[in-house]
Amino acid sequence: MTSTPRSAADPVGTDLLRLLKTLKLGALADTLPDRAALARQHKLSHIGFLETLLADEVTRRESRSAALRSAKAGLDPSMRFDT
Image 1 (cartoon, rainbow, N blue to C red):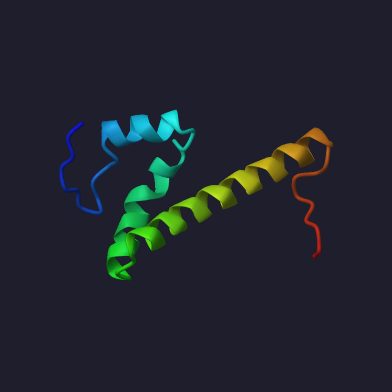
Image 2: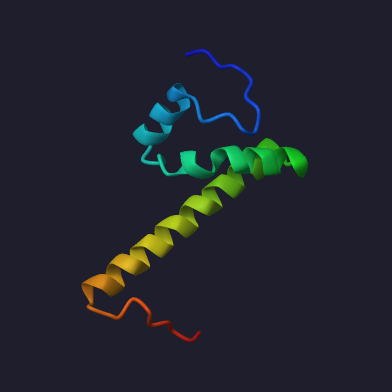
């Protein structure tokens, strides 16, 4: 596997996309270029960048899970819970 430098506007490479899909993280490819640009702007460490990506994925999964559970329960999608 070879790697070439990418700018923020470059799409995710096929090798990286394949790896993300293997790890069931394919949805990260949608936000990866934007997050990489943000990491460069804020001079995030590699760990900080990884933490940002993983936090995005956790948020996405929690939102999807809540939507699926509420749909399965037959709740109106426009309903919101006060917390």
